[in-house]
Image 1 (cartoon, rainbow, N blue to C red):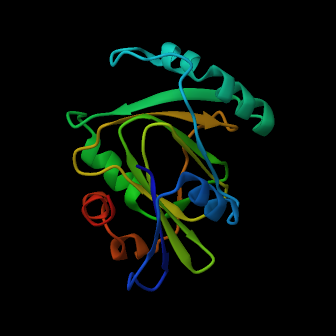
Image 2: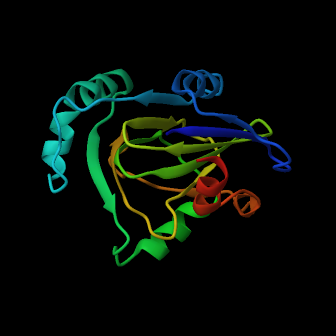
Length: 186
């Protein structure tokens, strides 16, 4: 189940929790963040490759590529046995921005995006079928957990792909980790 928490940036006294996808879409839409839920055009086996995954979601991928002028799409897969999982997690946990959209569609597994917008922090637990598009310049961080296990499509307008500009803020440490978020809200 997808879950959105909304908290003031200065604390987590009692965050607002939303688990209705239409409400999540509306709340994030007010901030300029796109949230959608997609369905595969056919069932996917666990061992399918990048081309088959993209083909299963081709209609939605094509729609976004045309609408936002994306030039590339790929599949990232990080499992609990990934040799660089700790390094990657640390890289994503620092609050950062991008000069491009950050668009992720979760094919399998889950991941936790935090968005820092206008004095609020939005924690979005993404599940299979969820797409989130973080606009350029929006401070955010991503927690895939200590034992990550997800596959997601990424869409890019910039051929350079994922390039982070770190803010230097320590705000991420003030909010629940992936594991704590799961324990508290799922």
